[in-house]
Image 1 (cartoon, one colour):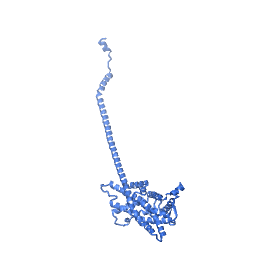
Image 2 (cartoon, one colour):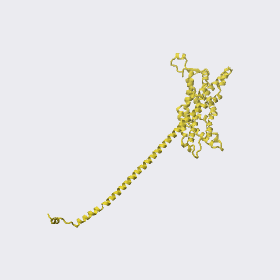
Image 3 (cartoon, helix red, strand yellow):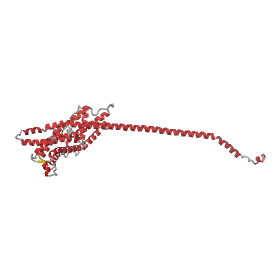
Image 4 (tube, one colour):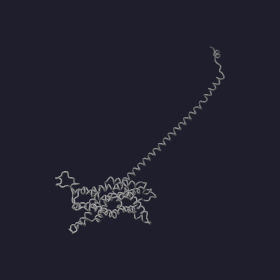
Length: 399
């Protein structure tokens, strides 16, 4: 085929086709703009990713800071709790030592007001009124040991209340020590004035308790002959009868209120409160502590703990006396199943010197079984912990 034939066969381009070619050239001319748009999109995506990464980083740093704050707060709370626990345990040791240190004073006060030794000396001289002296000795001997049990139990529980109230305030004072504008809740002079209120139990309160117990003893033992024999079981019942008289509640008294509280603190308000004017800040702080103590003494928990201590105390008193009610070899040979609680009996005249000497075991400054039982009772420990907890919390600062 020659060139002419090829040229004749070649189709002629129409205007539309020509335009399409032009359009094609225009289409190719847009290619550079499309590349620039893609670059912008990529740049925006990179900026978004950078923002997200930065946010995650900052969030992580914030989380680490919060975790560190929580850990520091937990560590501070643990240290504070450990410090408070140590202070509480130290305070309980102080309570125990204070009880032991005050028992000789209590014993001397009892032996002074209930002087059975003078009656014993009179009996050695075989006086004409021998029977009358024996009757007095009977009442005084039982009264003295029974009051010893009551007053020792009351001393243990009362000091637990007082020293844990003051201990809680001392802890708070130590926590706020050095802070501007803080006034001590229990400065030393307030502590001394407040704790001196224990003298009511060793003074007027003890005298009133002796009067009440002596009346109850006379009611129960007054008609019993010195020759009458009593078993340990019968003696236990007599002590229960005396307790019912002493601990009897009046109809107008609150059910949860222990009638023994009047021997611990005076019924009326503290004499400081009766002063119309002239009260110092120390007096006001002391009155506040005394009122808080009175509230604790009137609580059901105090009544329950004191009653539990008395039950343990009288049980220990009978255990001490049981040593003198042991069956003899003759009793054991006659009956192998002898029960010393009911079968072994002693004349009341022989029981009197036994009960009379129990005060030295009950009010012993050395840790005897009697005092040790009271100090180590779980109910007493739990009660002390509750009192300390109530008065060692920061909420007390706002009161």
